[in-house]
Image (cartoon, rainbow, N blue to C red; front, side, top):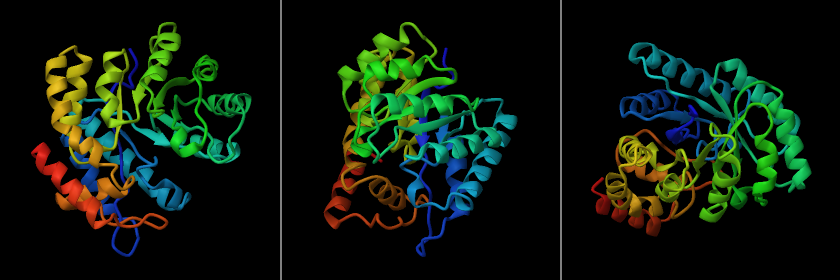
Length: 302
């Protein structure tokens, strides 16, 4: 069975009002996630505002803090918490450097987004991941056409999945039929290949089709509930999973009402968690979006 199974939080990067990273707040958030029972953490992804972070100062400090706290928790609790570091870039040489850093840090895997902006051919996509697969750290492919401009089709992903060290995919295509194709065409012949949802609202449907869990935005605020929903579905208790899914569904929608991570950061701030501000080109959400999020939180009983 894949070790990359369950609920993983796509961790935000908390910031102070002056735009500097709130490292004490980060430590608080990591402790909150671990105490609430999250299955794994994914720092330095889209939700972490990685495109605006300094790669050699801020990112290094974030990695050090995450690895230190998680490993200390593992030692005291006896529970394994996989850390999957975002290492993607549209520059293959840069992605190599980030992925080598993840390996050196002791991370359990690297999350590598499809190269964005360049819009490479399918052969270019394959060779990008082929290059990274040689580094020797487990790699989860991140497919999100809405941000990269190109979908990784299932035949191309099938080729990538045959490479050494390619252990799964974060599927954020938004297409359940495509996710089913990935499970049917790849997971049947490579059972340890993890198929994780990139959309909170599609976690339950994906698991029902044979998927392995979620890399979640919403779990930044409610890690215990997302973990319970995911765990129930994975264990076959779909009655409990459906109950939690529909309880959280209004917030699944509202958490993206005015972008990510702007919307989830507003919700976290509203509930007293140290999320803070965002960096340009992101800006604070609109008053209308705030009302939508507040209403959703109330509807969910949060």
